[in-house]
Image (cartoon, rainbow, N blue to C red; front, side):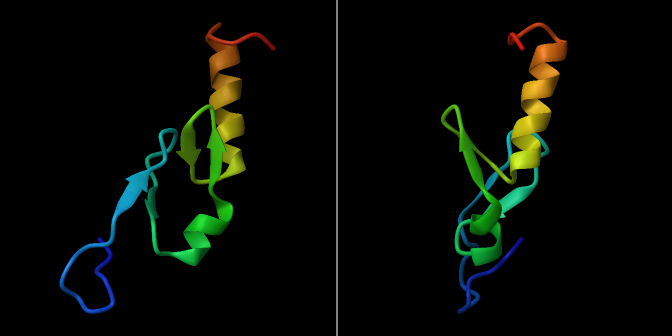
Amino acid sequence: MKFSQNGFYIESYSKCPNCGRLMYENDAADREGQVTFEGETYCSARCVDWKVDRDIRHGLRSA
């Protein structure tokens, strides 16, 4: 968990739908690598590629 600068509350965060990594809203390093794909925000382009490849292997998406 990451506390705010004043320590009174936890910053809002979301999880990468692919790997589950926490992405903090107020962290510039986290925002820098985030990618939005099909309406969902992923922690990196690698996770998007991973999801697309997995969907192709499972027949959920065409190549």
